[in-house]
Image (cartoon, rainbow, N blue to C red; front, side, top):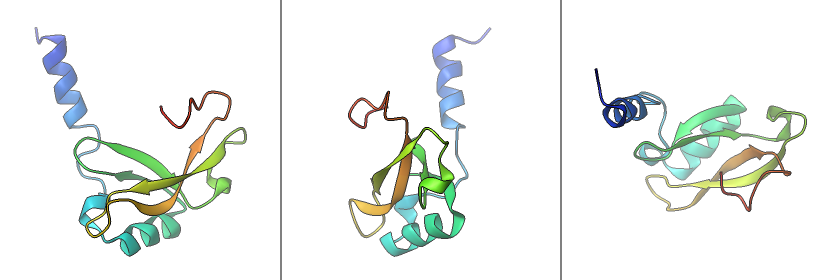
Length: 95
């Protein structure tokens, strides 16, 4: 029987291994990718990723948009669009 910590690590490593990653794109490419997709999941280095959207129409009814900045190949903090947040539970932008 596997240990929970090992199983959790294996699951985290496979959470989003083959998706697009902002760190392999230029800032312009990352912005274009999100803009064309409308809403997409984008890796941001290591095991981190989030859903980024072009505008509020890609969020749930009760959500609002928050500007999103991610690391890219050429820029440390590149604006790629927005994340959708529930303003009643946002906690200053931390999830």
